[in-house]
Length: 338
Image (cartoon, rainbow, N blue to C red; front, side, top):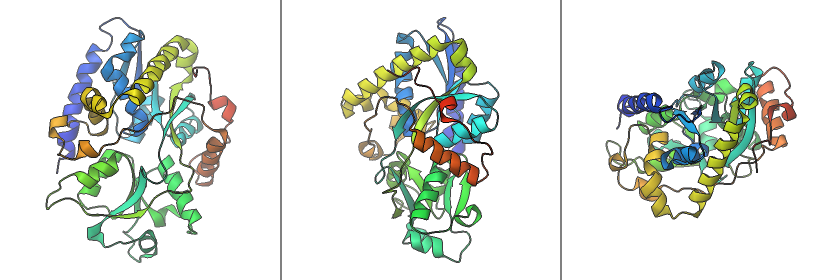
């Protein structure tokens, strides 16, 4: 199995090089960080296709796969904006960082692109069996204080289970690290979005392909979109940069949705791989993974639904992740949406 060190070090070296070249052409510059989720994929493609430069903007993509490190970078002003989940945006503002949700983007499919799975070696055959086990180590691995945790909570409540975070979950802050540990069969169960489901299902681990048990999908659960946030001071001081950012974003969406799968794989797969699996090239990816990798249809950026925002806020307050009520109208804007 590929080690975390082997994956991360080449990616960090590339980031240092990109940072040095970021303002070499004199274009105005904004700094973004992308989590390794589908909602970030259009921005990775826009970077690879040179569409930001076409719209007179240099976007410096800062690679931070750890959710807490990404939030800390935004809080410190080291980045200007990022793709994140709704929970992260709310917690940033609750913690004193003034950000604005400028759009909602990609949303997972309820039954195909977000599931809870377990390695067959743990002999867990259903979600009910997992949650009723007397083995305190058999918990669901999830990303701490995230939309994923929120959605699992909703799923378990729908199924009639009492929610207690110490009883139900083990917490991670890095989806890539969780994927690697799960593939090593050190995690009994976890909730994964795509493309990690495809990666785990097809990677030839030592001893053969990993056999998985699908414990649950999220049918009936209102899944949340990723959102794009910027620090308020950036929006107020340089709104034209955000306008150019969204012009490139909109063009990328149209190109992705109208291009053949073969063209996308040929012209953009390196950007996708560097986002989800830093350090890997197309040649290094095991046979079968790219054939199985589905590039979804991307909706244009839109306003985050108020009901979704308020649902996550109420949940965050109930779990004591957030303390104060936040007004939807003050945290969102449609200024850059066409």
